[in-house]
Image (cartoon, one colour):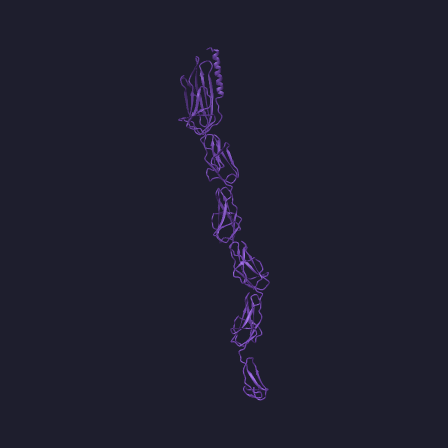
Length: 555
């Protein structure tokens, strides 16, 4: 068969077209995503002898285009190759065909048959039904072309199309699918991963945001100091699969603890003598656990919020702290339990004495002590006062009289009352003839005598008497009556050791006896005396009348 020059030129052009068609048949390169199983996709390539090659799921009604490297989140089950109708060029014809269809990947399929379109009036669709495809990367190959009835002019295209079946959702690390599963108080990074099609975008929404932001990077870092609250993340892979929602709660605010007793809230560092408890609040991630440390211990142990620590517990400092779910720890709260009463010491000048003592000296003072919570206030009731006033411990007091003291410590414990009498004044006494007060030195003929001592400061602590005919003093009880005649002497001593002066009184209830003398001659009462001299003698001071008639004087 002879070829004309024109025929040879046409054949050469067709050959060039075939070559270039083969070179540029695998156009594309941009990986698409979010394809739908309800869409019939045309491969974005040029194949000799075809009007299009389609990949889809049987029954799809929509239409679209798909590029080489596409990732599907469904498994295509059909490929259609549409062969163009048979054409003539002069007395020669072109017959379109497809052959050597093959699918390689996790699931394979092949058909070597050469399918032709011999119709001059219509296109022919050659259908390849694919087996059920599992996840993985696939390569679709086939040869399409045209047979030329002349000497030269045959042309073909080796078609290659890569795609991925990826029905798995991407995952995210560094976050939790639970809203309460991940807390942090530091900068954090979440990372999306997808083993097949790869991550297309990673989305996140901040606690204060109303919409999601996105990045094409596979990870996102939230820096320290960002807004507190719950961050939400999700990822979409290149097949259009969306991950679950993931969460991280960022919280860099420490919890707040509170100590309470029956009378109300105690500030940290306070003192109490009552039962108390501890609780904590957290405005962000919430309280995870509480701890406390007992007096004398260096170990933190678990504590249940609101548990009462009774007043009978060990005295000393209790420390509390709270941890939130993000790992923030509260400031330590402390309270000192002190149920022991404070104590005090009274002093005569610089020498300690027992409470209730009476002393004489330049001054007295009171020193308050508390070994745990410490002295909060000290009070004194001074001589002659009816109420207590504030007193500075260890301050000297010089006014004579009885002083009363007490102490209150910082936990509210009150001491017992302490007393001391400062007395530099001697006590006084009073002698009585019967019920009548008499001056010291008096002589009385009452039915009895007695002595009463008094002291306005320390009080009379002892009294003494020396009875008639005795050379020494003996103890005497105030107000005791004596009826025997004679001279009595008394004195008293006060609580401070001051001694009174000595008091005396004479009791004389015996009548006196008198003798009448005429000159030197004693005479009977009522006898006339002629001597001119009369004398009366009495052996008592108590008066008694005598009658003597003096003849010389007539008296």
